[in-house]
Picture 1 (cartoon, one colour):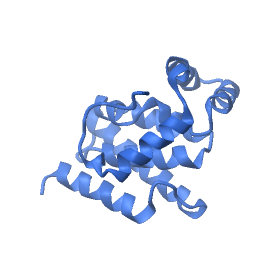
Picture 2 (tube, rainbow, N blue to C red):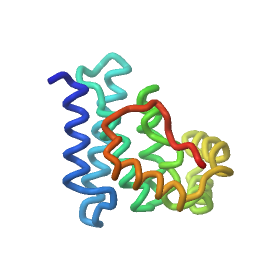
Picture 3 (spheres, rainbow, N blue to C red):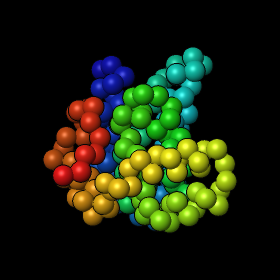
Picture 4 (cartoon, helix red, strand yellow):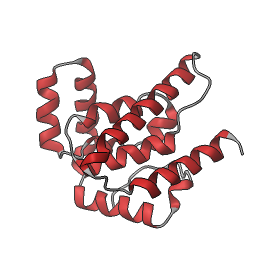
Length: 159
């Protein structure tokens, strides 16, 4: 089994263990997994790591955090997206908006960092076509259909 087969299996096991909507007692676990895989992906692409991050698992964690809706998770998801082209392609920008567009923008305005300004730029790019109800249905359908193991190279595209 190569690393990519292992990554697919790990993502499937994570989904089976926690589901799309994690309990309050599992949120810290999901954040820790996302931070770990983000670090691995960043280290691999900087030349200091030997095990690439699991972008499928990173996406799964971002989806779970989107469902939680904690505004501060926009930062974690943005950092994960920024580690590589693979991660950017795997993790939809919309996954930074679990708390909603207005709350996320308000929060990022108070953070006052370059990273927050970058996220605000991305939000400005996607917010017009973002509908949380449609996006939730897309995510539910995507994972219910079992297509999460296949990388199509396409993120969310509204109907």
